[in-house]
Image (tube, rainbow, N blue to C red):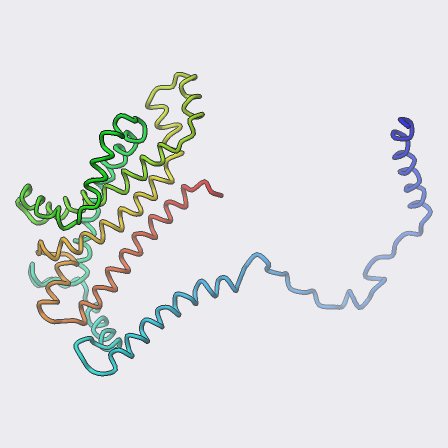
Length: 305
């Protein structure tokens, strides 16, 4: 049987070679089928592009916006206090014709107000990231520190953002640092919690290997913890930037001065409802762009693929 196993393939190969040599040579395909040579070559299939999914991805948001504008138009058919979509669009065209005019500290274009708000968000959010992310690493790494800080985080995290504003005004004696303080204290919690959760989910085997190799704490953080925690950390950062943009509008309504929140409140005092509606769209678009930018960064550092 062993001989059959080792000799059968050789015999089969020899028989195939003999059959191939005995058979007449195959004619060229073009010569055998002249019509096939003259037939048009079909276009290359583009199976990699899902056009239906792309149409749905583009058409669904447009349909949602059309539904919103349609309902808005129906509700404003009868003249009332809410302006129609057409009147609001005309006001937006006039407003954005010169968004950066400056006629004094209390009369500036909407572009300047958006930039001032973004500056406050950047400062407060940056301070929260500088404090919250390292604190999240420490809480997740050391159980004793986690037991000390976790109750404080649970106690302070649900506090309304505007409840922190009087504390900022009392301490800093000025509206601008008080608004930055409010952004800082309200946007720090998602970064602490998500970073700490990411550290706690690092497999214990990784840390055991680090202990066996006698790695320093700095090496453990930079070589093991940071790559594993990065997706959690970016999720916390993305949630925090949404909170920061939400808080700044409310804080600026109370502190005054300049900013998109103050601009909305000032337009309300002037009973300019069209500009308030425009500001709502602008605030939503800016918040969406901030979140999408951070989601793009998170996808760049994702290891899911």
